[in-house]
Image (cartoon, rainbow, N blue to C red; front, side, top):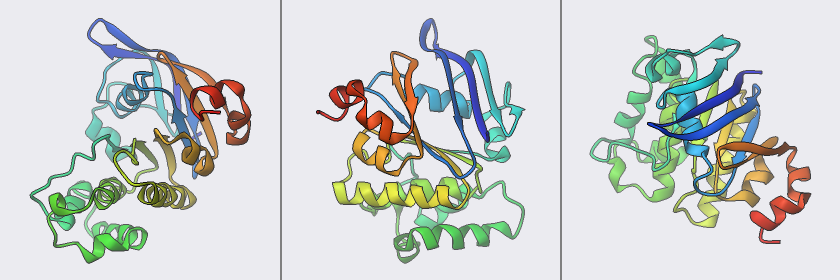
Length: 234
């Protein structure tokens, strides 16, 4: 497996949020992480990318233990993170935001990165000289994903990409992530739109109170009475 999370324990100060969490994401696989608000999904992504210190467990990328590595070093090893809320630089252009994602690349790869993300999101190329803060919500989310892709990640962590978007734009963004996975990048997706997540995912995990309580193929989770009652309103 490309990403392995083993027995992860983490939290904030004395408040423990994650309890022995384990999951895997393979090459070219889109894995959805589902759960109610407060289940620990964002904390898990932040722990994997190094923004939250681990109290226990391990995070491995292609078999390499990331213990003690800073978020910047994890990014250089191929771990990309698209945070909730996008966190763009609004007074910088689309192109300038994208260049930040390529800041650690070897000379010459930046051009390849631009070609890659503009092919995925043609609207960003049309707006490359526009300030990020003037983009629509959907375009800003595309830019946040594209910025992470500029670093050529092997694993991409994506936190609530459809938040605040119309159903049409939400579908467009999640289908783009399906394309990213199709190109060989492992994607771990935290998403509030459970129906759409299960449509695009290869596998899914369900979190409750900081623990993984269910996992499996989308068709099996969609049929599980607990998932249907809690997340699908059925």
